[in-house]
Image 1 (cartoon, rainbow, N blue to C red):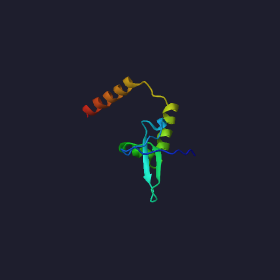
Image 2 (cartoon, rainbow, N blue to C red):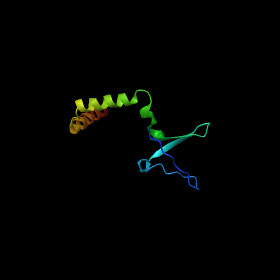
Image 3 (cartoon, rainbow, N blue to C red):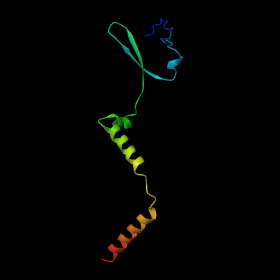
Image 4 (cartoon, one colour):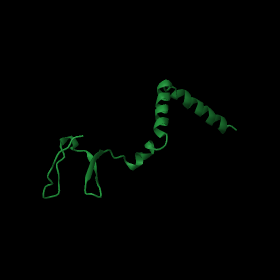
Length: 92
């Protein structure tokens, strides 16, 4: 643990060092007036689902499957099958 003594400026600001420059911090004030400052990462609300339940594990398993099962370049074959199905259905 590193300890330093700082003076709060007249405008209420305190310099905590360049290693925190540009980072978001959480400041907790305890009942005794002590402050706890922690560097934090903020997750956008629309990405929170990634961190709930086993979603990250499921995504990792999907990425492993993708690596083990490369995409087939058979677009023309798929289109032909779709056209054949459409033509069959038209003639019914």
